[in-house]
Amino acid sequence: MTYVILARNWWALAIRGALAILFGVLALMWPNIALFVLALLFGAYAFVDGVFAIVAALNAPTGYSRWWVHFLEGLAGVIVGVITVFWPNITAIALLYLIAAWAVVTGAFEIAAAIRLRRYIVGEWLLGLSGALSILFGVLIALFPGAGAVGVVWIIAFYAILFGLLLLALAFRLRRWQQELERAAHGDLRTA
Image (cartoon, rainbow, N blue to C red; front, side, top):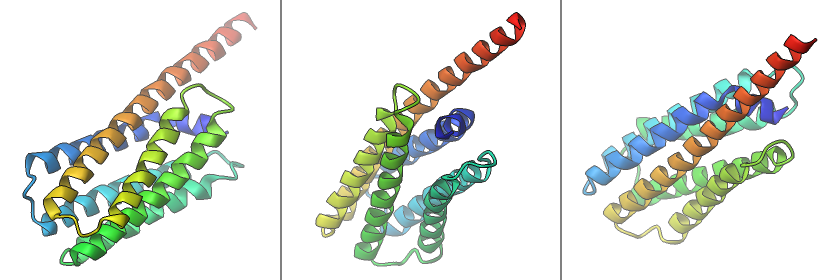
């Protein structure tokens, strides 16, 4: 059932990936960005990413028992986004721990989804790898919170770009798989 939801909502993964890449490129273009602006950019990204995850959860077919996992991931993103947008003057250390926690939680949910997905399609490793990357990113930020803001911006930028590329690759693989299923279903209908 998870594979059908992911395949049907491949476009949401593609948008999430594109937004992550855009966020990363913008952060690279302005490496001396103030923490205030970083907080706003990150908050906006986390909020939009969370909204898309919630939409995917609410569009789950009736009877899908794991919709709440996607919903919680989205809710975490929305909450983190709102906190960082409404309190952009939050201290650098607090923001870094907030980002680290968000990355670890998101990564754990992605790995759990990849484990379930592996029974249905080839390529679920992309989702698992993006989850592992998220957890690694969160742990590194938590271990080295005193790094300079510019260094953190670069780490966040590269993480966002790599994460976005992995999500795009998964989205287009799911899209191709969904098209194959549709062709097979139409072929079965024609022969019936």
